[in-house]
Length: 449
Image (cartoon, rainbow, N blue to C red; front, side, top):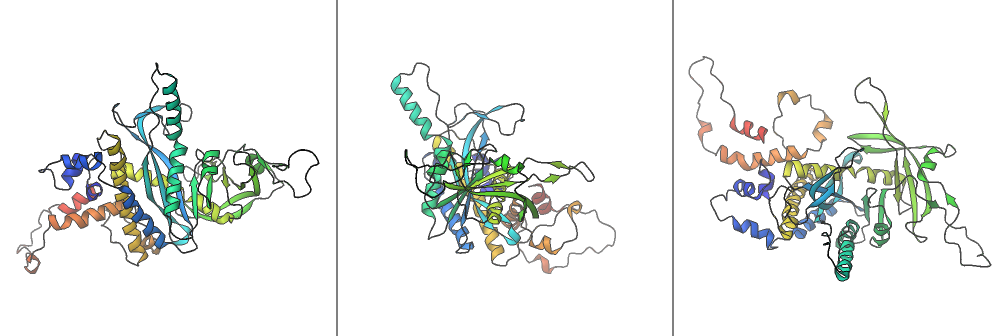
């Protein structure tokens, strides 16, 4: 785990073995550690989650964000590898990529001024069902349909949601947040009891008001749905409903958002017993360059299964969801998750999960030190990146790259420059002639890493 954070090369097992100093020893034990299922990543993530819960107030809910990502693979005989839709492809063309699919849950660690840092608390390999052979009989077809139901992305998400909800200690509330792919009937109706779900919803979702209380109809069963409510897009375009101004933290500072909300409502996908609230966020204006044309992004339509949740918290909780995308970027580009060359199903589950757990523990250590009032030291940045330090810079949360460089400095500085008593000797040259400066090996190594 330490080698996965220190290694500046690709995150293959051979590179991790070399980074930990075991290149002259038997390397097969490292592969058997994962292929024989001798590691339990849940114990590591449980420590991360418990540390995060200790940092939260007693009345603050545990906010969990779920999303899936792809790890590109070129081998056709690796467990869980298949053709997947490339999420990074252009909008006008659907591209396919051979990759593995992983499901991740990240929890929000609130910071000052409404900011938050998301930390992974679960990482699950979520392969799809294998292809059905052409000459399959009726029994094989039935087994394949059952495998598809068990290996559906919603099924993976529900199993992990229930496990995390059971592990939360005490009466702390749990809020799950997801994008539009998880805002469906299976996830919302199958989520754990006493939990809340917040997610994106289609702009043309069919909504209804709750039925009015009163005497039932003379004939027929009681009415389950009330009058038709406007869709999220109709709500946004309705000039009779005024916009509200709500402040929330996003992109490094607080912004003023224009929103419209309506609730409690009923959604056909969740049935008559589930009341929801709709939140519409107006598109924000932005400029690609100073003095450029003012452009607008698409509006956002949110659905919350707790109509009583204040809109300020609802908006802020969902804006923190961008942190899980930051986790994916850091894990793939800086930690090397998914780069290990392993084939078995057990290795492809445990090895990436252990690397993600190391990433989580790194951030738990950094945020715990900050919570205790300790200021993390940072290496001297290059001259072209220097600027006058302000109070905001002193309170700024370091990036993952800065934490990795600081960890490498703490781990390698003693080996590069061992402690001696040479600092008591005056080694200044006797001549005043200008000497050619020699490069600093630690500075060169840590900046390159």
